[in-house]
Image 1: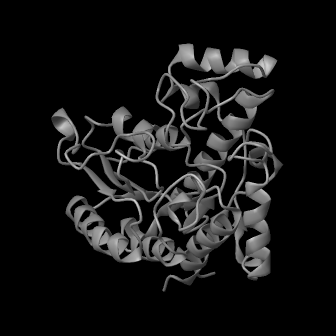
Image 2: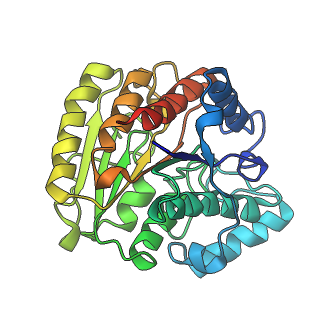
Length: 312
């Protein structure tokens, strides 16, 4: 069977959200799934499992103290994990651990040859640090995956590519000094948008210097600016020859998002997805990330899936 693309969907990850009045609402999952159905894509996908990540897996990235804090607030469902963006909800620990588990299972399916590429929509929680939540993100599934790819599967050249409007600060700073994490991030300039990081001068630290690429774009930047920046991303990846690629494809970089200012079209997401399949023998796992205009979310994410399925 050609172009086996894995997809993780289900109630376990759909439950990750903060209520109907929060930008990260529970409906994001079903909006995406319905778009796949309408485009006739759903039946051609291979379902990858969802499970709860173990405490040991979560602890490969997050501190024990932070895991204990999340577990305690998960039991009460009261309060905030940060200064106001990320409220606690009952069952939060288990739900977020399922997001991480879905990502780990999708990666395993790719590595084991069960699928060629994969997509996990409710994932890409790239702001959480090793010790704290931030920006709607409880556990950093990308960070856990990167650690597991390195520790469990022994990969020495892992690429993380992020086209969400917000800088993937939780990933960048966690691996800033690691040369085995090849980091490339296109985002709205941090002088205008949360989290305020990701300046072009941030190229890594110590042994990791030169293995990190941050490309801040001005508010209002659209597809022409994206394409110019993307050529730099490809040259950067070619130089480092990754063995596995993670794509954080947040749809909040599309024009019309209520909390960001970039103006990409779904063509940008499609181009990124298609071109990344040239690397790592096509071993690419995409995670949904942000996106708070539901029509954009459906269009951007389904375009990534469509391009994954179309790779020659």
